[in-house]
Length: 125
Image (cartoon, rainbow, N blue to C red; front, side):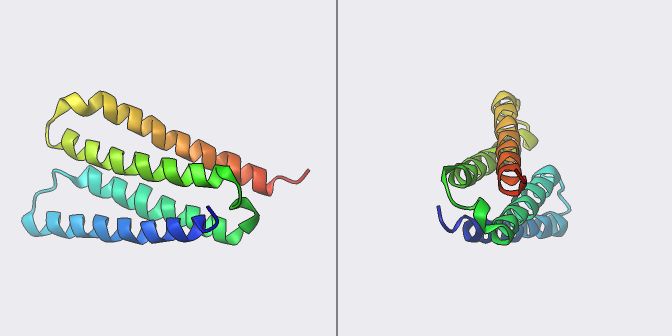
């Protein structure tokens, strides 16, 4: 994926709008049951994806190849899945806990893959 930085930046602003919208909705209704979802959307979606996108912009040699494309795909799939499962969990559906745990590990794997990409692109031989 040659435009991985742009895709991460685009998704980051969509996450920011979503997280802010959820926050406004919670504030307007004074129902903060989904505050953890709001926080995760803002931190994993807005902040992490924005930083991923900015890194790929700042270090363009990191963007080519299959690893950044895998990183992008894994991040998006796991993020969406994790946020949906977190909503269900916060609404009291405890049966999603194992799937949420797996999605959380998937998000960690996404960051671990990003660490590999960062070190590969920035390590001096």
